[in-house]
Image 1 (cartoon, rainbow, N blue to C red):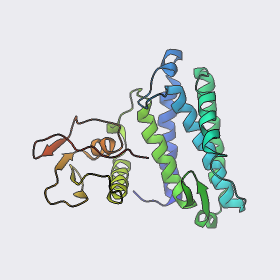
Image 2: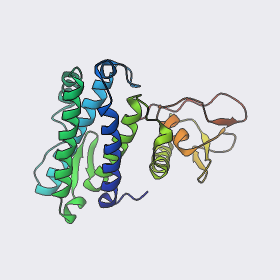
Image 3: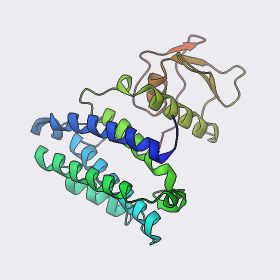
Image 4: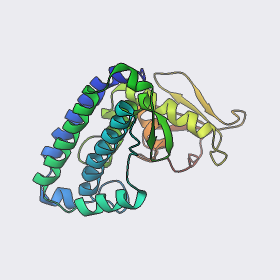
Length: 237
């Protein structure tokens, strides 16, 4: 999958449409029910996705205008906004998510080509504006799974699953707490974390491997050689 933001916009739109379709079907008990994220209801996840869209609007506006606008006012404000919005009605949650994504669409359309080369301030510090579309696509696809409402890693587009898998493997390769392992996706090239000699080989479909590495699935669909327990990857972002 390309990281060209102008190409990824189409993938973001498609992923958003799938997310909104799921959100449209959530009733009152469903939005109050638990998500796959500890301590968060589905209402928390939907609110987070709306506020993350607003954070991207801030960063895109910063890239376009040169004004310093961080993604969030602070970590405390981010957490407070999610908590405050989580208990709203299904209709209000859906309307908020729709309008937030529309604001994001407007901000993307307002970006001149040269603005994508700017540096913006994300939660973890400076980042190129050109990375924002991949970041939004990742948020929408992974948190759609977190809703635990019928959308699973197997539903991820193949290009997204492979890109996520490669990104996570590259990140783990820089972390001293990551166990050594060899990853063998069924439809891709072999990837390694750490020293491959003597490391277990984990095989399976790319979406299942990626979902396991980011803590969204267990061992189902994976095989490990030699036949032993799967290693435990460190917590993902």
